[in-house]
Each structure stands twice: as C-alpha cells, then as structure tokens.
Length: 218
Length: 218
DNA sequence: AGAAGATTGTTCCAGACGGTACATTGTGTA
DNA sequence: TACACAATGTACCGTCTGGAACAATCTTCT
Image (cartoon, rainbow over all chains, first blue to last red; front, side, top):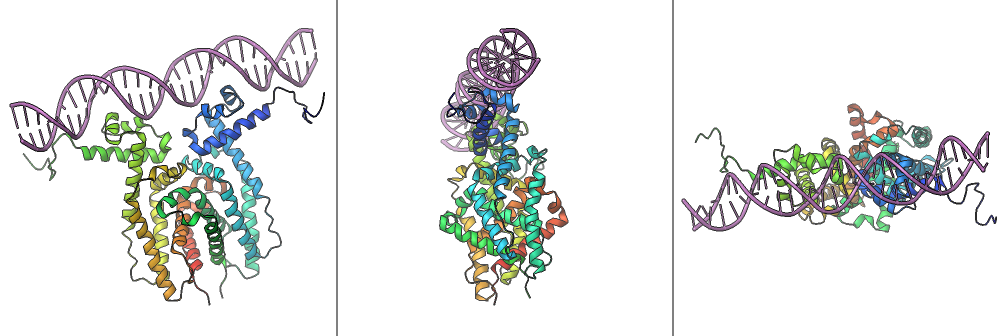
C-alpha cells in the first residue's frame, strides 16, 4: 500500500464517480460551446471522454440535463474568478477604470463562457429558470458598482443620477460584444480592431467612454 | 382575360418561382432565427410553406445553402432600412445622438435579425465568407460616422483622436447587447431595464455616454 | 404544335441520433 | 461473508432528418 499511488482519497482504485462526472462536464462544455445545444452530439462528447454514453444519461438524465449542468457550472466558475478582483479603497474613477479593464480582459479570456451565454440567449434563457444560487453572485457584482457609485457621488466626481445597474449593463455590453460579435464584425469591417495592440487601445477607449459617461461636470 | 384576376404580372397563373423562393425564405428566416442552423428542421420550414421540401433543395441546394440565403437577405434588408436615416446638415453632437437613438430603436425592432447575427457568430462567421456586396453597405455606415466625426473635430466639439470605427463598434455593442442578451440579463438582474419606459431611459443613457465619450473638454 | 428546359409532386432511404434494456461488476455496510 | 445498491459495459431500437430518385407537368421558344 504505497500512498504514492493513491492520494489522500479514501476512494477505491477503480470507480470514481466524481471524476467521471467532471470528465463528462469538461468535454460537454467544449462541445456545447462549439456547436450549441442542438448542434452538439452526445456521441462526439462521449468519444472524447474516458467514459461512455451510458454514464451521460445515468448522471445527467438527458441531453438537456447535461446542457443545464454545463451552463450552471460555467456560471459558477466565472463568478468565482470574478471575486478575485479587489477594488476597496481605490478612488471611484480609478476603481471603475479597473473594473472595466478587468471585465474586458476577463471576457476576452473566457470566450467559451461567452459563447455559452450567447447560445443560452438564443434559447431565451429557458434553461436558467431554476439556477437559484446565481442571485447572490449577481448581487455581488451590482454591489461592487453600488459602492463605487456611492463614493463617486459623495466625492462629487460622479453625476448624482448614475445608475449602478445601467452602468453594469454598459460595461457588460461592451465587453461581451467584443468577444461574441468578433466574427461578424470582422467580416464586415476587417480585423483592424482585434490585433493585440488594437485591443489594448479599444479597452482604454471604452474605459474612458464609460468613465466620462458618469463624470459630473461643473 | 379579366385583368382583375391577374395583375400587371406577365407571369402565368400557376407557376411563380420567385414567389416560391420568397415564401420559403420568409419561413426559413423565422425558423433559423428561432432555432439556429442545426436546430431548425427543414420539414418544419416546409410545413409552414405553400411549397414542398423538394423545392427547398431545388432552389437552395442544401440546408446550409438555405441558411446562407436567409442570412444574406437579412443583411440586405437591414442595411436598406438603415439608409432611410438622413443626418446631413445636423450639428455633430445632435447627429451622433440621433444615430445612436436610431440604431437602438432599429435593433430593438429587428430582434430576428439580431438573433441571426448572434447565431452566425456562434458559427464563427463561416457562412459570410462570400457575401461580397456587404462591403459597400458597411462602408456607408462608417462613412456616416466619419463625416460626423470630421465635422465634430473641425468645430472643436469632438476630441481630435476619435475613431469612427471604434465609435461604430461602441454603438453596435450597446444596441446589440440590449436585444441579444436580454434573456440572460433578465434572469440575472430582473426585468427592471426592459420595460418600455426603462428602455427609453436606457437609450438616453447610452446616447449620453457615447456623446460624452467623444466630447472635447477644455 | 412540339421540342427543350424549367418547375413541381411523390416516394423512399441510409444513416445518424437520443435514449433504453439487460446484464455485470464494484463497494460500503451489517 | 453476504446483501443491497451504486456504477458501468454492451448491445440494441424507434424515430427523425437531410437528401435523392423518378416521374409528371408548366412554360417558353421556334
């Protein structure tokens, strides 16, 4: 019994349900993000898995169940990453600037998630009906902006009528579009805006736009 | 031969290929916008048509051919509508404001088109490869903004470094997101921003943001 | 009228697809 | 060890789907 082989896990050497589920979810996420709910093929998912078709239906019920699980885990993962950002103590303009830049980079770094959200919107959000635990995470996102706005207004640098929700909406819009609509935009207007340098400029540009949009003027 | 029955058309009374094509395209557009390329069913399309499955393949080759035709016509239709807007002679700030508001309304009024674009982005714009005649229409969109920006800079009300392309990108981002991501946004943050009145405010808010973003400050 | 090509109807199919039945093996517990 | 249940392998199925074959009918041109 060398514990170099079997780690701290009390699990056996042959069956590992959690690992199987995780394996399936990882592959399924990629396939759904690539081809959508109807476009993804269970067979194709299974082939890239160490598991079998049998197990997919065993653990997730049906195709939609698998899709829902993928979506839910995707949201959880993303929100968790977001919580890494700490803006406490920064002056409001600086905080907003950082938040925009962070969101921009964050979206850019997670195109698979963006695709899943776009796909779910095509389905009119039908599959998010009962994802109850998202509420807290979303509230956190808004609260961050509420703090920034409150401070900004108090210090007299933000317009007194800025809406944290609208501001969040605007940040999301810009950052989401940059990833989600990259392809059609490129086909229509060229790749000009999507080189690494151009993206840096773009990021600065939208950060500025959003900051100027909330700034109070004498 | 009463010409109350047959209009000016020199066509016969029984065969009308153009009408058949148009009929198929209309229904196909709705189905593709609703379910995506892989999700749409040819049978379902045909059932809502006065025509038959046979004709779909006769005129459009295969499913992808039909999809491509739908996409192309959708773009053509939209751009044509856009050309109705006339901003000549307006002061630049006013012109930009109007353009943003017009785009906002325009996108909102054409959710089917927005969905098609979102779907095509999921496919990485693969099906727009040879839609050559879009180039002109797109250039027109940019040229409008170039004029506005040039005037604005000349009059000293716009920053001298504004980029018409980036400005267009920003306008598109906001207006597209409002329609495309409505569902997931609603699930996450409530319907608050999507009542008719709230949309009015939102429209004003993004118009202001974008205008302030280009404004030159002393 | 009649040939030639365009348009349409009917019927069928080969494969793919999501999902299931049945049997077997692993595993924690008494 | 023996039981009960969870996890897995294998093989199979009914249906749906995009598409094709074959044949008939319109329409135009000579």
